[in-house]
Image 1 (cartoon, rainbow, N blue to C red):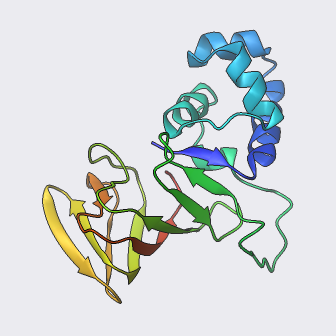
Image 2: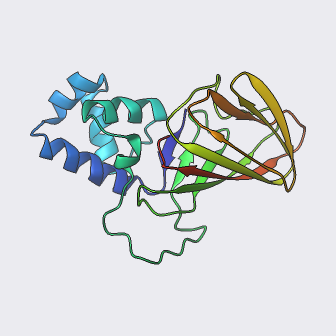
Image 3: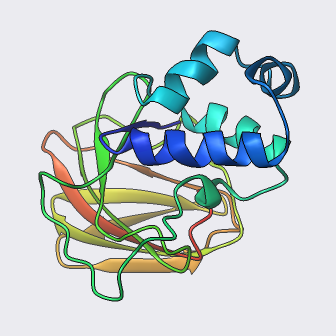
Length: 187
């Protein structure tokens, strides 16, 4: 599971807009999502880092994709991202984060991550309706897809249907750096 950092004001603004458009109070959203009023208030104010599980609960309340929480209707036709301006998606324990390389248009998500030795993207494989491509910049990555494990070396990539249960794992003693593309972005 992931948590969002740097850029949560956009997420908070989107959540507030969805909640208000639905005519809900924070208390009503808390009851429907199973999250506390305090946590929801912190998310809306950009002071809390919600996990991917929390984001899934919120998206379900609004019958929307998680990516809708990150969409930015103000995105320009040309977008340049730099390290200091990128949204980060953090794992709950803070083991590592993904840097979002693309804006929130809802058509393509590109992420960069440095996965430390022994870490995985999730405790178990999971699926979602997308296509993914992972390119290994440095190190080695074990990719589990549909019950089969593939070892992807530096300068190699793997593309697969994300409806197959999958996860990424660094089983080596060195960092692994990847770029991940997901289309459409449905984390």
